[in-house]
Every structure is written in structure tokens, then in C-alpha cells.
Amino acid sequence: MKYMLLTAAAITVVFGLSFLIAGLIRRKMEKKPPMWAHVFIGIGTGLLIFCAVGFGYLSIHYTAQDEALAVLSDHSGVSVSEIDGGYKIDSSGEKTAMIFYPGAKVDATAYLPLMQQIAESGIDCYLLKTPFRMPIFDKDAADRIIANNHYDTWLLSGHSMGGLIASSYAAEHADTVDGVVLLAAYPTKKLSDSLKLLSVYGTEDSVLEQDVYLHAKQYFPTDFTEKIIDGGNHAGFGNYGPQKGDGKATITAQDQQTQTAFAIRQFADTFQ
Image (cartoon, rainbow, N blue to C red; front, side):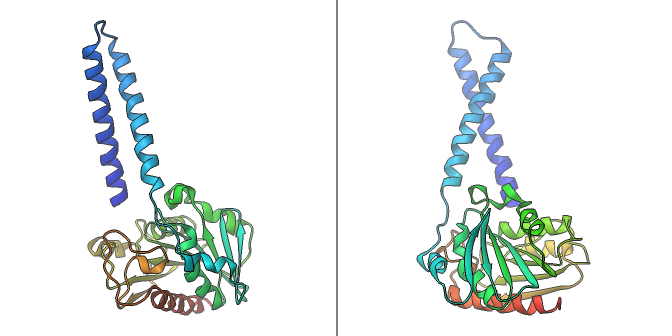
């Protein structure tokens, strides 16, 4: 919701300034162009400014740390392979898979350590790479994974905005998805009671708005589990460094991810 409000405000400001600029240009011209030209110039200027600002905004992102990238070359235990639209972290199991949407403006590879721990417990993980690192631009990315693979249990998961998108997908595909795992996130659509939900967040998370989260509980299915990690924060689910506006964690990211992976394994066991 916050991203949508900020986007709406940005669009309003950009096009307001564009028409102001177009008006000033028209006023300076000796031969005044017709009003339709004024509108055309305003829209064109607005689009140029919006594209430039948008590209600049999307170019600034959180990069994966070295320990996350090291998972790509770690051949002990689970295997990691690049697939169309992301990565597959292959476990020894064959019955359960989890599709994961990264947080907004975060390198997908930053979540490899968490995916590795989850896969070590027997759950195949599909880590998505979304356009411009924004999961909102490819909500249906899970379609490609589900269409080309067969599992008894499908879990949809995501961190922050990625969790919002994952829950939105699950709300529209309750006949295919079995469970939802939200990391520092909440749904904005009612989830079917045929689904199970696991919600995980840290006590030191200052990015997740608690009042919005509590309000969003009305969209939870009847069967849900909440895991609150003592000392965990918002960025601790990935390995991309501190996040603006976040609280200071009192545990390591590895500890937070270990607790998260264990909670997900317990959640997955309820489907057996």
C-alpha cells in the first residue's frame, strides 16, 4: 500500500510540474501554439521526467553480499542451478517445493543462503529473478515454475513486497497453491481457507508497519501460524546488508535464517 501511495503521489507531482513547465514555455513564445499543443508538450515532458526518475530509482538497489554469492559455487549438500527466470536450489526431497519472490530492489541472489538452508531440510526452492528487481512487475512468474514441474505440495513465499505479491498470486490460484510463507510481509487480498499460512517476522523490524500488518490479519486464512524471531530485523532474511529505516538486529542474519528455515520445515510437515 505504501508503494502504491508513493507512486500515485510521484505521478501527480511529475505531471503537475510538467504542465507548469509547458505553460511557462507557451507563455514565452511569441506565437502562442494551440492549447492541444500545450497539453501534448505537458504529457510528453511528464513522461520523459517520469521515465528518467523511475530508471534512476530502480537502478539503486541492495546488492548481494559475498557470502550469498558463495552459495553459487558451493557444491557441498544441495545444488544450485540457474533456470529461466531465476534459480533452482535442489534438495534431496521430491514432494514439496517453494517458489520465492525477493523483496523490492534486492538482488535475488541475496536470498541464496536462506534458500540453501531450506533446501537442506528437503524442500526444493525456486528463487525468482524479477524485472528491475521488482516482484510487482512479474506477479505471475510462478506460472512458469508450476507448469513445468510436479510436486505434491506447492508453497508460495516472499520477503517484504515479494511476500505481498506471493500472497496475491496464492489468492488467485488457491486450486494450485497449498500454502503461503510470508517473511516480514502481509496479504492485501483475502486468502482462501483452503490455504495454510506461515507468517515470520523479527522483533526489531522497523520496516514492517505493525498497524498495517495487524489490519491485514483479516485476510489470513483460518489455518495460520505466526513465528516471531526474537532479535531479528527486516533485512536479516537476506544477505544484502543494512536496509534503510530498519531496526538493529541483536542476532546474526545466519541465526535469523536458520530459525526461519526451521519454521518453514515444520510448516511443510503439516502437509504430509
